[in-house]
Image 1 (cartoon, rainbow, N blue to C red):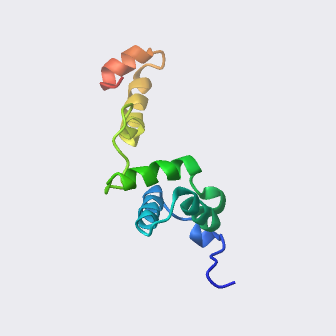
Image 2: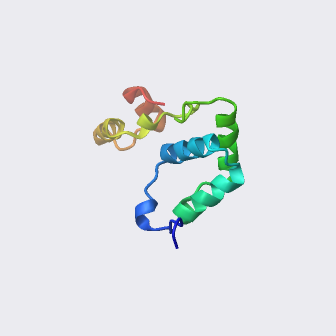
Image 3: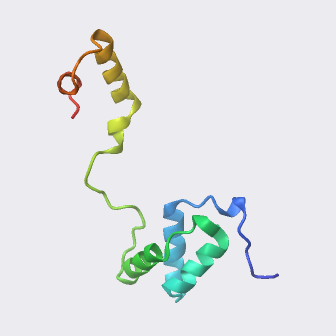
Length: 111
């Protein structure tokens, strides 16, 4: 059927950023959140964002948001679990396997 894109693995490799750009483009075309969500489900299937997420981004774009990147969030940075920090903890534990979490934290300068 012409004009219909069927969901396939090739169409499911969109990042969250890609999806937000698609939402922005669709808003510029004058589509509403329900229509945009339907299009995303058609292409992405179960990998499509929830309708609430689409509504949130439609509102943000409609209010003038241009940047489609994630806003910084509070909390532990992703680097807290990086390879370098894991190595620091392993080295600390290799000296004494009975160290407390507090001792390891003090020694490695991590909380």
